[in-house]
Image (cartoon, rainbow, N blue to C red; front, top):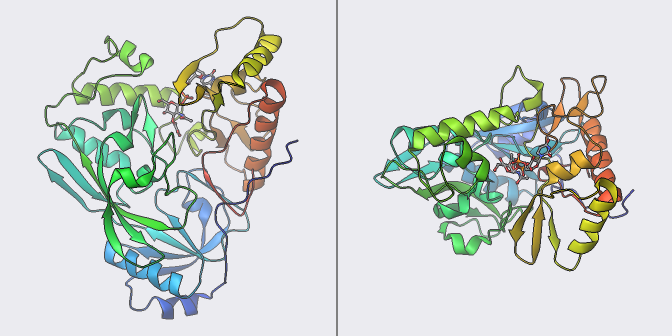
Length: 377
Ligand code: EPU
């Protein structure tokens, strides 16, 4: 076992009753729901009860967060719920449900409110012949979550398309547009991740009106499109192939398919620094013999593939088997999945087993990607 236990992302301060909450939010326009199970609001479908304040407009969202912050009540923001692992005990502050939906198109871009469904936005931009987002097709969740962890797939990160992000600064209560340069983007991260400092209200994305995709950078995608790296293809074709690839890996939500009851990739791909790389490669060779290890260039080292390491550490797709309520996806080892009856403790136990096994075998520590509430992996 590892002795470093990262602290939970969200802490609560003060509990509140439904009536107190209704009084507090009377002016904001939020709709209060008592005792909603967070398993109903998350794609992993685990998580206990919480009070929910549903915010259908940006104005309501701003007023609600300001009121809760002023009263010292802990806030958990939930929109698409696709990157959240919540404890079975639930959350004893208030869940602010981001239910805004506004989308406005320009000739070479789009502005969308935080609660808008990400893939519907991607589909709409593709439908209008606007290029840029097609590689990010089929990703579950909301628009507002995309800058927080700099969502990426198939060679594109949202950072490269963002013109600006509208934020509520929770320390001052001020609302303003922030430039991408202020947001400290990195691989699956930004200054907004693991931070309570700001709430994303809207994003503005710059897109290409030519109807062609961004230059293709991901080998697997270029291959299925019969393209070379750097080529462009019509946006609708690229979207179609991305959806096909993702679906093949169980990464497109489908209520009937338990392989998609997940938080997407549960671990980020680990970056191993140059000084440690020889040691890790030696450990891999010691266990597997001479093998081709997928590596991608990264600042200060190499990015390895978490899915590959998990599988080579002995955790096959579907681990630990049919009797378990929480299993690795049968299509991709990087997704931890709920087979229907899993609770948070089952997911956490599986995550620890996988993380510890990879660490013991290869000396690489995998970091969870989802935001955890009340649990530590
Ligand atoms: N692999 C295995 N076993 C598996 C799955 C993959 O050995 O079960 C190997 C593959 O053979 C390949 C390598 O792992 O050599 C990489 O696999 P893949 O192309 O599926 O990509 P990934 O690194 O697992 C990343 C992102 C995905 C994104 C895809 C496509 C992370 C943590 N994951 O996955 O993002 O969609 O690339 O660009 O960055 C997400 O972040 O939630 C997510 C789904």
